[in-house]
Length: 139
Image (cartoon, rainbow, N blue to C red):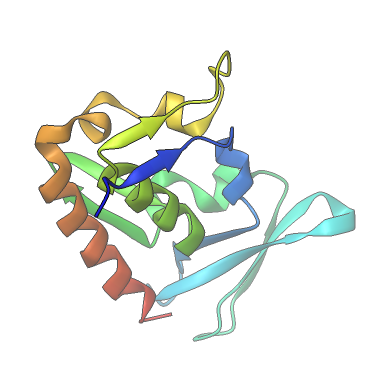
């Protein structure tokens, strides 16, 4: 059996903006922010309490402090926007061989913090990712 391999495809953080999972400001349950395509606005619709909130800025309703998928890990906050982002992080962390796209310093893989890149934190980060996967079941 070979080593787990991660190949950087040049994804940037915006790749995962299509759906952001946040804590509803009203009922404090997990909900989704969806992009209203032709209006350049974000629309939060909570499936649990029915609140509707529209914003012109991702940071107004999807800031890191309100993300649904976050947990303490290695003395930091491990977070992801959605399942696809979490999959990306898990694939990166799990891999013992990480291949980068040459000359692309704007890719998400190149911009990950050192504590996520460090092999010494691999097991703890994978446990954190497992916790976040359990939270996905609540949505």
